[in-house]
Length: 296
Image (cartoon, rainbow, N blue to C red; front, side, top):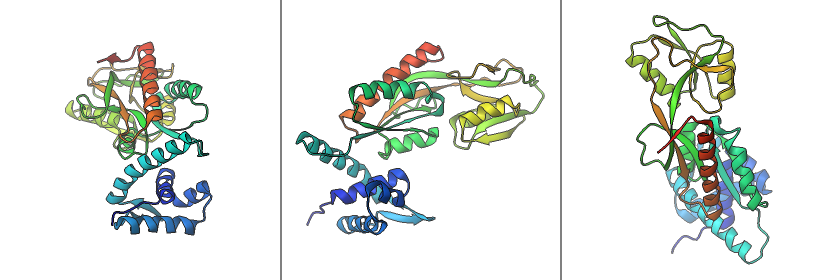
């Protein structure tokens, strides 16, 4: 007998994973925690697979769970679309968007405002995430669309929007770092593309360096640069006025360009496609307006 999945149980699983907590999902959906646990158990019985496993104090999806979640999002979207077409009352459709922190203050508002003009009843969830998690979230259906940075030549990762040069940056009052000096770096946490590129280029140039400050926050990067902790690596977009390009300082190796790419979830519907089209439009307009990127 073929498995027949319960739509309410699928909704519980998706909301719990998206919120990062099934206790929060219970509150969001107006259910008890015991009811949520029963719904997850029902899904495992219907699938004949272990879908979740305990990690720390919470539950995370197994490989089978991740696979089911991709289908669950599409099933829920089709269910709700059919309900709306028949005039039934359903919760507003949610479109989930991800951006690097560098583009959050200008591209996000422009994109969301344009989308809301045509869809005032839709719910938009926006996340300014670490670049390395954005791609995984789109791939696994936790985001419907996003823009993210990639190394040159990442042809299998979404749609190339433009190339962006990487720059060495520092506060305007920081004394010049000379060729023989140790380079003190202000960096994002590990797995950051900018961090990996900077460290690799310094090592190749046999230039001494050390991580003076690491952080997951772009605002903290700017604050650390203003406090003269060292120099950083960013693209030229939305750089504060008091932070300058110091790529010409002696002994600093040249940095490559990186790619800015648009990512779309395979399970997205018409609304998410429209949001992604707007994100593409606003990103290109913003980057071209600031003069920092070159279109391919």
